[in-house]
Length: 198
Length: 231
Image 1 (tube, chains in turn green, red):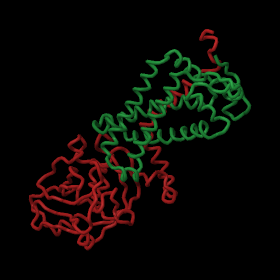
Image 2 (cartoon, helix red, strand yellow):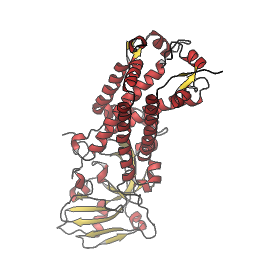
Image 3 (cartoon, chains in turn orange, yellow):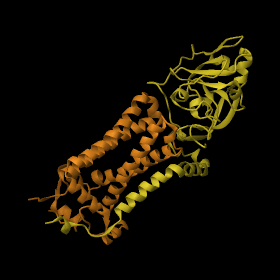
Image 4 (cartoon, helix red, strand yellow):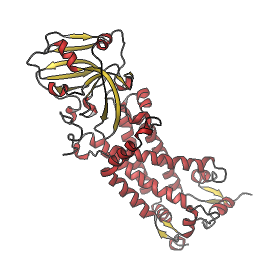
């Protein structure tokens, strides 16, 4: 019989999917504003702008509420996990395999850290764009470059993440962990050899 | 099992990466644009073959729900106000005027720039020569088919050598997204002065505030020295 171990708590899973939905909503409305062909076909720029802005505010607010209302100590523990990189992580990032990894491998830690930093930068540059349109004190010539550059960088992370989570045969079992919470024990042993599930 | 026994080992690198990324991103508010324009001008020759950005870096801004369309059979540019001879020019009449061509750079006040845009159209002087403005007229109001968009230039600003009414962009008829069939081009001023979907010019005694000026943008939108930049 296949044995399963718990990889992600409910708070972690809700946080992940709220982040995913928020990001995709922002990507969709953002691309309509950004890509000329979509801008022309869809039109309604003022409406799309408001949708994009309020999706962004809603996105960040929901993430904060999930952490505050969920398992706060668990999330803090997770943050400490992704903060720490050891020798095995360095080896793993250099492409040396097999290197035993913990609950998160080094790539997942890096993805989490960068995603968090991008979220904050998206929020700040987005607010500057919104208020800069209304007040020159908030206007910087480079805000658009930053916001667009973040979009490209986040898109690269997302494509890599989706490939590993949905397509790549040996890693895509991880999708079960982030949806249902549990993964196969033998898969966990193979990919996360240092991790000792509770 | 207590929390401390499952504390992961290793060095706290993640917070460093987080802070460095955030700090680098915020610092780019000061250097991002110059670095990006350095890259894009260095890649200029390549960019004409392989666009670095979608549609050459243009973004299509509009203030209303849909982009105005036009019917070539009925479209007119009206020139009215303080003139001896009000005009109502169709596309054929516009194209019959002396054709001007120029290559200029387009700057948007939000921070993006498109270099080396080839415009084809007519100089405002040729329109004014036909309309004969009164001596009391010192400014022009440019009215867009996109209600309620309008903006103003002084006669002096409108007579700068590279100001034109463009009906062609990069060798093709102006597209709907760029203001078909006619737009104002004034490269020395930010895009919001470059009124798209232009269908009416009024000669007026003096400037009033246009659409974006009513929302707090500068009347004289000189690139690099207005709207909070370069001051």
